[in-house]
Image (cartoon, rainbow, N blue to C red):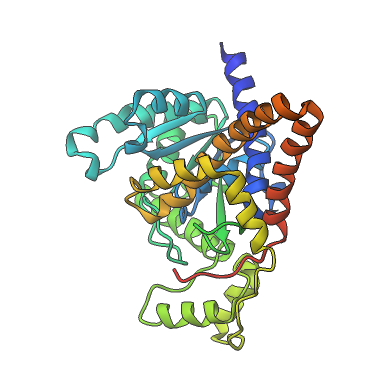
Length: 352
């Protein structure tokens, strides 16, 4: 059973790699050499774009990962089973009801066991998602998991790797994405050399400081909107994280530029016409999205599932009238057009 679950995980991971390349204009992965091939790891990721963040962080990660995600995603039984089969676990918050918080004890014990077996865990230390281009104060929940596992298992060490995920224009298609894996932090050393309250603060500060360098960080003060508008008006490449952070630090921004014209827009309308039924499904389901951070997640999920299905059905209909060769050309061309539009249309900034 465990073998079959691993096979299922790798199949889905392979499918996600392909799908994400049809959805993102460019995916840049940096710092993969910082990921140990063996040993327990906790990946601490910023969280601007709901479930898209762990998808990008794990699909191009050599390790098999377990995830902690908000519990309300698990409400429907079928979805709960599907997510559990991919190593996702619910974490309960006060907004889920105080009575639910006790369920976290079981989840924390599962996390301790995962780390004891020297596997990996993905967690969002900010405690919630936000499209603001900065790192919010970190909760101490992730330190509770790390130090709890270290206390129970004196023979293990847990490497903490901060991960910055940066989008050029989240919720807009296509978007450039940058994933940066930071330097590993020796949690055992922090734990043994300091009293627990100090160790918690040291770990939070180190992760926070790395995240502020691994993704674009505009300090959350009275100048935030002014700086963000200056960067958007200059149409900067936010996925060039170091350059943008240098602009922010030096308060030196390029002159405003016009957004690039999308000369491939006619191609988009061809895709829309060819994907009319998936588009109708998206329009209907998008009405139920309450949080803007989930737009990209739902759009990607619907497109990744419905496009291949409907292209295949439409190809089968064509084969009935014109033969399998014409149907095969149509099927391949449908994916090629989407791929060309994704990779060559401009990815401008957006107002956040």
